[in-house]
Image (cartoon, rainbow, N blue to C red; front, top):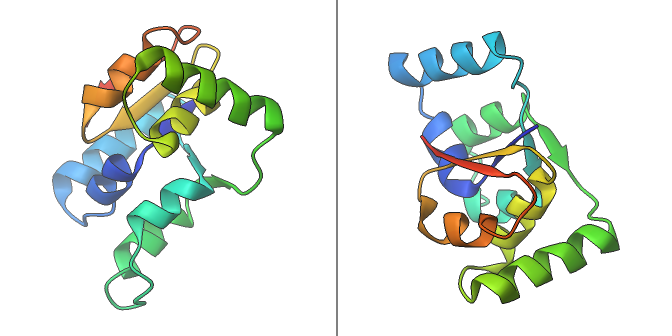
Length: 126
């Protein structure tokens, strides 16, 4: 499973050749559509339809996860506690990718710390 954080959503929403190439590779590798927890949408959009047009277009191609099971929320809390860094949203992104998934991010710092105690979660910079 591939899970996007807000940095990855922002970068993938760009309409350029490089981004199109990345999405093509992800599709080829069976990693598209990615999962996007709905809390990531909060960090990715402004509420202005004009400004958000490209992001909204991208999100329509993703599996937006609208409900978080309590077990996933508790796992995210534990990962955040163990890492002693990062936001609740970052922790939820990593917990969603467990076990054995990948997180695509624009800023891997906190996510790598949160993923360290996670079950086989790989953090990849875009």
